[in-house]
Length: 209
Length: 179
Image (cartoon, rainbow over all chains, first blue to last red; front, side, top):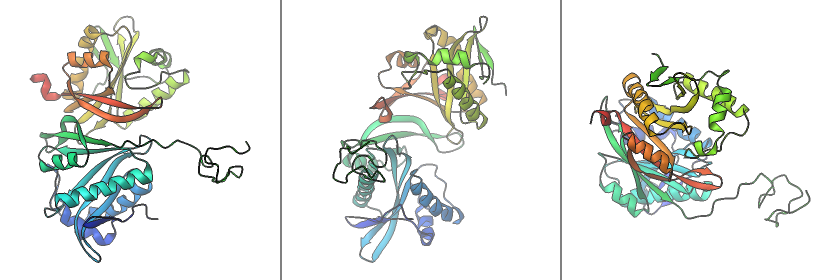
């Protein structure tokens, strides 16, 4: 089963990872965006990463997409978008984009927004966080604010970059002003499920007890 | 490593599952003592036993450590203070406390330095943070007086009583102590 959809955005697409993408992932990780991030010297763990991307999505812990720029059948991998620390009950997740140097700000923002909108529509998430770590490109902060994120907290020495070195983490959040879904069991509200007393047309419940 | 230690007129020890239930229940069944987490106060004593078992399991995996703070002489439980979400890679942890009415700033100034020393010197962690419900003025004032720095407010972090709750973040670094 595939829980990670392919989604188009203006100028490219995001799509789920496959084992054929190990080389592309290896190339992305040769250009770590985050200070202190280890550069892998072999591809062994990247195969495992593809497995994990499927497992994370299936268990609603996270989701990972490969970010491609281009059109039709001419796409070039330029990065990846990740949702992690997904808290389904709290309707929130953290987002992250890792890009190759050639990934433009426009494509980065478009891919980020596309994934955000998908997770909002499909899973009703309404709180999206993004951590910018001191040492990353300063322009990312502006990009995030242009995407509707607000700076909420600066976590001092929140990211370890070496044995005894640390970097501040600037945490942004974007809250969507949408109504929360009303919790209900299978068969309640507009989902008839196996409740045979429930009418398809009666979205407000009712039916014989 | 000895996880039990004393601090002035108080002793701090790891809980014992089959003997601390009543005292823990008495502490955590008062709503105003857990409001800042935020959490509903315990309403049946079995919850204390469940919490003690949970603490033991989390300690075994070194994911968390909670200390019961007792008076040195009367052995009355006055607080539970602990660290959780210990991240051994990032050398960070989250502080959590439930304080009885008997613990105010003077008592915390006696207790907390011993805990901080243990966390920073024995466990070699670097960053200690507390996340608490925005507007928990009494606790935020205590943190400020203990040397914590306010870092901001993370919005809509938990659902509590049908409302999204913002969490204020305060932190203390190992390097703050020598500053």
